[in-house]
Image (cartoon, rainbow, N blue to C red; front, side, top):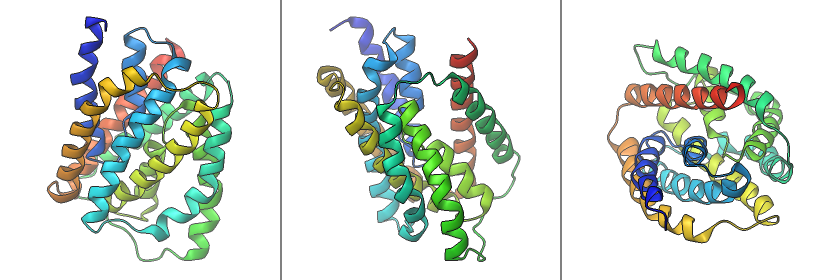
Length: 250
């Protein structure tokens, strides 16, 4: 094992720690870190999705255990996102155009959440009709983009749920964790049909992300106030936006 790869262990631990605290898996940053160490994107996407499964699964466990999960809110998104993530994961398209668009979107969302001085709260006017009318097409789009880019898609769903006022920060984290887990499963199935993950590399990093993901998600679900989660989410979005734009324009 190359000694340089040992640097990935603490970096992946910290990534899982921060992302899992807001219900995310960390795939966008895993991709960036692998790129910095010279890995080809096509070779490491299955490994990224496998690690994403571990962290988002831990995040979901802790947020659901803390009573923040609302399956009614998740359903319309995953009905369409799961098959779309499989289709996106099976394609070999350049993600640059998507990266630019999504990078700008995430940047705008991050700025929005940074300027709030109080935690966002969910409104009471959400009807099943409105939920499915918006959730089904949005889930289709987000699932396809998640599969195409090799991530779980929660980094797009979280700001949407908060901006629409459909969930507070902790409920958003719980729903996003489940969304990421299911889409990562679909994307991983599509990728492993083409090539399996590097199990040696995956195993090396699995312990780091399990430890970081378990600690971060437990802290986020049980200890951090919602306004802190919003600030953490804003930082995650800023980093992801920078990564997307830098990879597309660099």
